[in-house]
Image (cartoon, rainbow, N blue to C red; front, side):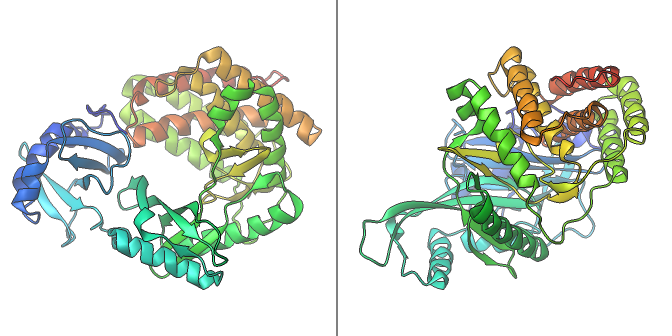
Length: 455
């Protein structure tokens, strides 16, 4: 969840809008001005929390809020217990007819109630508990195993809602098999995506799962449960188990990193058809875009950020290339589930063909930065120890040393994208973390000539 007080970036275009988007002001405006909602419902709203943001410097900002009938805002399960509304600024021309013009302190915003989203409107199929159950049961019927959902046990849990971009919900219910055995509690994850992306995700999951089951039994890929490509829905089984941080806390790190390095190396070895190449030019563009966005929002750091971008781009042209693999392209600690001796890899949206050290650097760098993040209680020495253990095990798993020049360029990419990502979603403490990312990026560039790679 975002902080109740939004940490506003410096932005000549959007700062005035975000200064007006404090949850208390949004609550008052929604109670008074959302006239497409029954007055009795609006009168019940007592609390408001910002739960997600999508901010593009100088272009637009969208922030989603949960409106509840309690002053105390719950940290989880915002839907269906809460009403969700998102605000967009500046107002677009023409504005969608699904929106309502909302005025906060003399400035106009577009307001959309969930699930009446401008682009995710097909989420309406899951807005009612009964229809969510109908869709899931339909997928079970297509599988032809005679399984039935016990409807009274069905629960919905909103996992992620990024306005106009994506939506992920977990459905949980007891499911009875066709052979008369006791019902088992079952969880699936349903997400929305444009139809083409939905079809691509389905095909990737099916292909990777088939290969993993045959050749890499220690690697888990979620099973496809069903899809509605035309409506933009895709469902997989929920991989249960520990998060990576929970697993690391349990075994101290070294054994876990042996398994993690092996699993990622095996993942890289699975060929996936139809993936795009991630070229050096693509990496250069990502570095330049992240630096440019951060310079807009953090002008006090721009004199340090610009040289970081220039030096990284120059060195990317010097360090050469490597053999390419199937790249996860967003590999970090949240993308992993640990179940017994098996590793589950999540979120296959950004797969590409590219240098394996892109995944390695991102994974190790984000582990290391856990030691300076305010949203996790992990000390710096522990976080750095985990990262170095992973790097050591990666060298053993692949049988070759890490190329320091390429690795450090990709580590800088990871750092500037981490800072930009926390800023774009207005995560608590994003400004302080950005400063630490700049410090570390400078350190990585200063160490480029050294052979050994350590976090």
